[in-house]
Length: 58
Image (cartoon, rainbow, N blue to C red; front, side):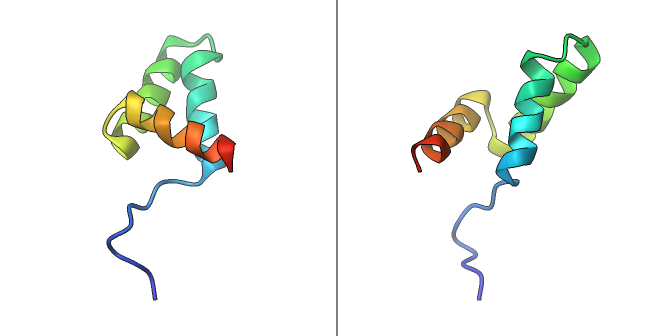
């Protein structure tokens, strides 16, 4: 049974794609979309960054 108290984040590969869109795509529309997706999923870019740092440590 799934633990409904644990926050569910998108798959890591999807998050990495959004980061790529935001940082490396060079396309302003893609940059905005990547940033918006990260903020929508995590509430802020800072929380997205914290999550990614934790995932790298694993």
